[in-house]
Image (cartoon, rainbow, N blue to C red; front, side):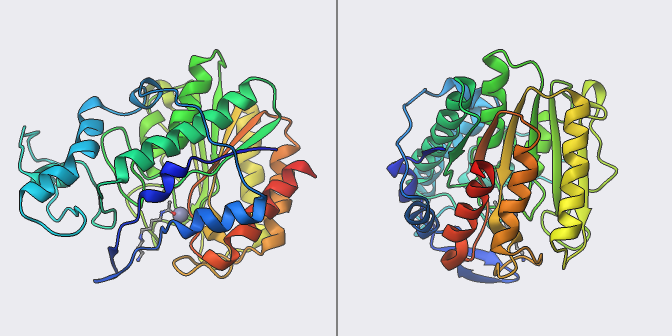
Length: 336
Ligand code: Q9C
Ligand code: ZN
């Protein structure tokens, strides 16, 4: 299977995140990519397809903000990484403010996603990596793997969060649409609900979003991913949320994924983006499912059995020492 990764992605390395009431070491570390690369035997750098495929799913003002935030943060005299602390909750007027703290709050839904001097470049190249895998599949590969980091599925059209800045799965899905695939599906099997991907396609009938994830009643991102969120307008019925309780293991996860794949088949998808997080693994430090390394091959086998052409994009997974084996297991299930 073709595998893609850009060296520019490594430079995004925030120091600290606000986690359960204290600043702790940032979990989404560059070493994640190193471990995956070592386990899968390397990857090829993607070509630069420019800003347009990213701007197709994100607001221009938000992309400007991602680029400018570190400069504004420095200009405000701040050390370290840019982190928001005040948010315009529902009901506030849309104000054209320029204070860095106001911009941060208006373009983030949590305080766990710092922006560094290198974030924009890394997120840009993470998206180029997703595009390379997408185009490889559009050009005839059955599947291709994009080693995306930073990840993407928590980022919406105009906001970041959950270690995500540019929604690489959405960039991939939109690129497939723009290349002429009529009905694209995103299957999200990260531990966390992909609120950003859901939001971006919520009112669209041409991109189906299905997610198996930890019940947001107990787990981040809390405000999205509940079973009654099914899309709106033309997108009514084109969102499927399958929350599972903490402790879920292969049997429960596999059955939920089968429901998602049935719905994707009924939708008539002609292209699949798999948002893959290995944070469903039993030893993940911030998550609570019980999948084993071998289970990822089983799940991938079920996805491959649909016969859908599939671009795989990397999302979460924070047990750094197991991450390579978990990703290699997933890819083996596709090649199996
Ligand atoms: N106390 C991804 O897997 N922190 N993002 C949760 C729980 C944010 C995970 C805090 C987790 C984001 C791509
Ligand atoms: Zn996750």
